[in-house]
Length: 158
Image (cartoon, rainbow, N blue to C red; front, top):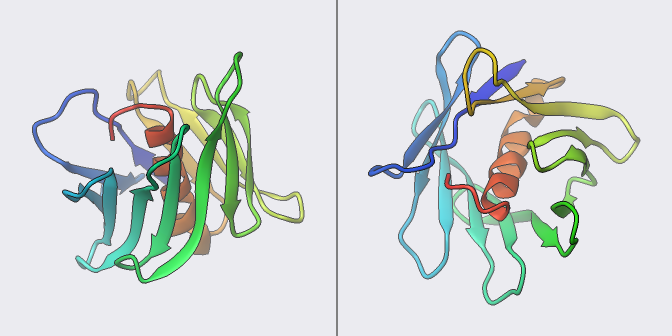
């Protein structure tokens, strides 16, 4: 299953959609006004299915991930200090990420070493669009939340 996400460099609105290959909206992301960055994810029925929130105070960005409306904490994404390239520590479902974070091309790997998703930039067909190729549809919510947290931790506007 492939999902598409296009971060916006500048936007007057605080709403973003995650699409499937057919162009149907799977998730909608809305920013929430708070002391720090906070994004709520809604499914196609309008139910809040996830929250991504910047933990403050921290020196480097750390995003906490919750299922639902900040009800169930499930993990976090920390940006780590590195002079050469961005690196991230993933504490979520036993997953880790590996790849090129400058280009935002990476794999999400589970605790057994199996690749469960590949995230890549689709520069040919849809400039600045990221394709999330997810092997198991049950992981799609978690993968999308990890990708959004990494995009935010890299300093890109979501």
